[in-house]
Length: 300
Ligand SMILES: [Zn+2]
Image 1 (cartoon, rainbow, N blue to C red):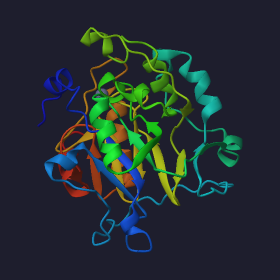
Image 2: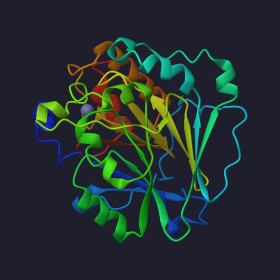
Image 3: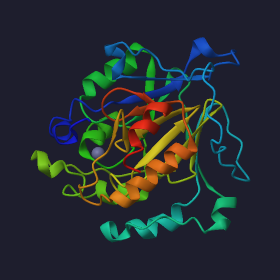
């Protein structure tokens, strides 16, 4: 079992920052996604991460959500399809008190999702940067070495060790509305515990069912509260970026502000039901569906 307490205490340099970007070498190959994920784990020998088509989804996996009226995406833009912003803006304004499940009863918004279009530069390769926790020099080096530029930051949740370098990337930031409420308050985003109070503004809200369309691929957002009220996971071609919800042989703490063990168990069950082949956590090495199922069985 990973000791999360010590990980958080020294988490500034330990958080995994992930980069999702078009992968030139995979273009034109139907068996591979047209995008790649890389991370600082590269230095430890992981290399670029692509979902393997050699591994089949276990039976019974949930299908991808289908949202009607998905707008067309131009190749020169990144498109965020937001299914419940207006509903959750109201909820997030209540801060901690808003720790309720987002019901998504608003079928009108589900059928007519909000669209946010981010124009992409032509001279560099756009990347979505997930959880730039710290060390902007290292992040920039990683981007520059791949001729990437940050087009969008996506935060899996609101803890300081996942967003500490986000503002220095000078690009739009997307997070769950409940994460936005915590990002605005150093005692809730835990930065005050480091003696360095940090706040961060969010540009785009993403929630359960929101989609990010990018280079012909689709990233799906699922809301997974429990570690924090605004925790999300990002599903992308059988890969899931789990933030601090799921770790290799473990799961996130639920005793921090807004944490909720019942919600965490429900989120982990939801994640397993939704399915994935590889899970890339916010800390530590990756895991897979079988290992995650086995390690969570005693908890959920
Ligand atoms: Zn966390």
